[in-house]
Length: 341
Image (cartoon, rainbow, N blue to C red; front, top):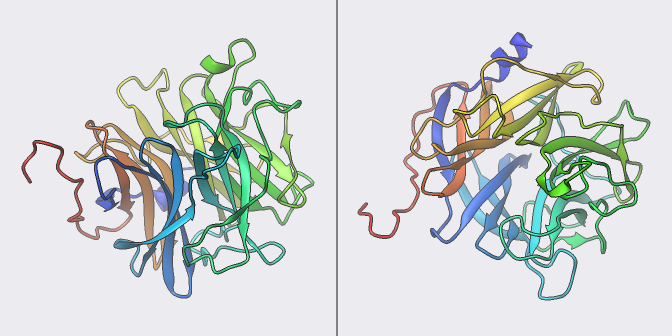
């Protein structure tokens, strides 16, 4: 565990790399992939109605240019008309590897959580699947499977996911540790007595075809009983798997709101928590409320730990910390109304 920590730690906060174009918007949940010598980021934008999924491009992992939307609001009565929060699926998960976005049946895939209620993660959220047979580095609307693949109202919903569901991340398991080739890690809120007041925990589901999913196991994988444990992202280091995830509002962490941690496994099912220092926690003016939601890559010997940075004014963007000192970002949140630049 200590060796993993030493390998992945990023003590140098470079700062903000993506900010919303206006203070009416919030930016969230980066996912990074590589294609044709360039880097790409999918991320979420929230502007009061719900989440949409966007795409950006970079040459150097530090400076990013918007490309456009991948999943937009629907002016219909679809189950996901007001929420489409997407995450890349089936990425090469080798630590320091290609970070390419792999395909299945000739298509690139995203899992996402969606819902039809307006507001910030409002209403009942379920998990859906989207796909494209077009170039994933160009902004275009992805196709979506008509119905959600997992919901809190399923007959086999468990006590840990019977209220609402959040971020999800899908990997290809070539060893089929679960007996299935595809694993989805997802976080959800639930409780056996009062679902809406339950904690948020990380659990797993499995599939043979990326379309039909079933819950796996009799308990959550990561469970801190109160607050949030969420947003799992998996990297493989030889025979070891590392799950980056965030914690928030844990009862034994009263002085820290939201922070990034990790756990390790040798079979993708049984996970052991790191008990040492946080990988990322609030410390700077741009992340002094929350510093959470990991996406970590290693390239040319440098570890880049992307995360959602939220300040005490509620401004929300994407920041990065690195294993090597790469300087300080010149990007700042826009001035608030009445502030002078």
